Length: 141
Image 1: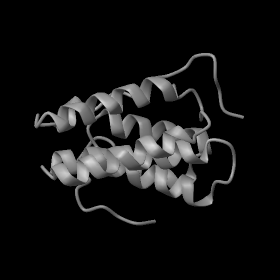
Image 2: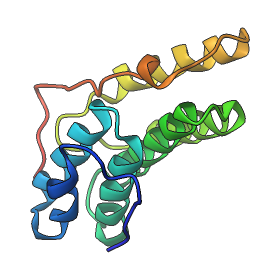
Image 3: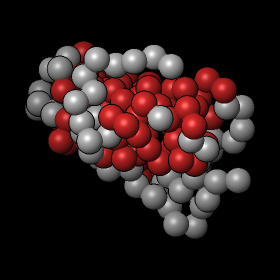
Image 4: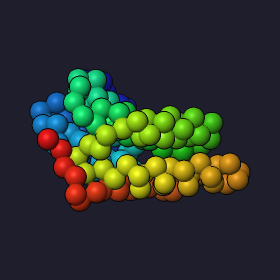
């Protein structure tokens, strides 16, 4: 497993123990990391899932990885990186099947809103990124 140097968070133990998690457990850990302001760690967890996963929702995982990377760029003030990865995330979501309970349409709308802000020369900060919308009618296999 790759290590990330900035693990000074309450999620450190869970992040380091991610290899022992089930698919759903690792997915959920990524969501918690992302939503608690640790997008790089979420990116790492989801990327490890994505690398070995061939099932439905693979493109959704890729989109989440790209969204987390965009949020990480926002933390670092890299507007070009944010814009590029938001577009990649949208492209992935356009071809995606839902994974777990992710509401793809709502997430695409939220990403489009971020892109609109960037196009209007507004700053997009990490706190502006959406929580991951759930679709209670869907579940993973």
